[in-house]
Length: 290
Image 1 (cartoon, one colour):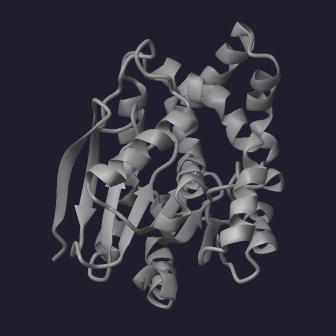
Image 2: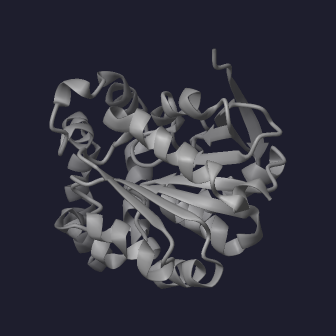
Image 3: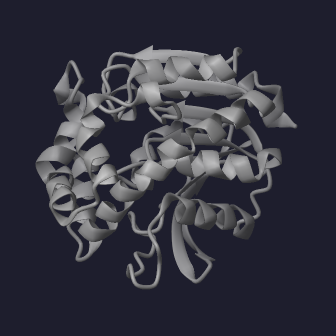
């Protein structure tokens, strides 16, 4: 039986909620979630890996059970999220760890790796992009907002926060939609429906442009440090294309790339397969044991 512990860490005046499982002396894996979800997206992956690894899955500020400070007191940018997560690892005394990054977790985790490459033992990217060619046409409404941050373009993005869009994110590209539990997207919708959550998410939509601008820096990090790297990708993702997964091999020739016949939230349908790939990858990665 897997014992999952739940706690909160005080980080720069914020309470960061996190899930934790596995022996604390085992190789550590920090799980960084994406939009519009939280650490609960790892509810099946954590038990599948906790016999071999020390897993920690925090909720980003403004997401899940972590504090959602007012926009007047906290600037919702990816740089700000990365700073909180970096400090979070220090507060819980996580000195060296592998990264699992998904969606928003990728620009957060890659920023952390840029600042402290010595802390990162290896990286698993599950539909976590770092290349222009990985961005689909689905980003067009956001690109319009980046180019012209008008009220009209901001308002046009509100449809991305609806329950219908959240369900679509979970089910698009999934051959058998009956495999997708409603638990994840229902909980995500609950968090998105909180007062002021919409404006916070719109702020992050606008700031995502800074992630794209940093792609060359992320890629330079990959080339210089060549962390052991595994990409596990839902190949039918409407946002992050398979070309983005393959691109990692350009900067890390030994990177492993695995595709699965599913969509953006690949863990919803292929958790067992992804867990096996991660277990094999980390189990054979010398860096994770250093």
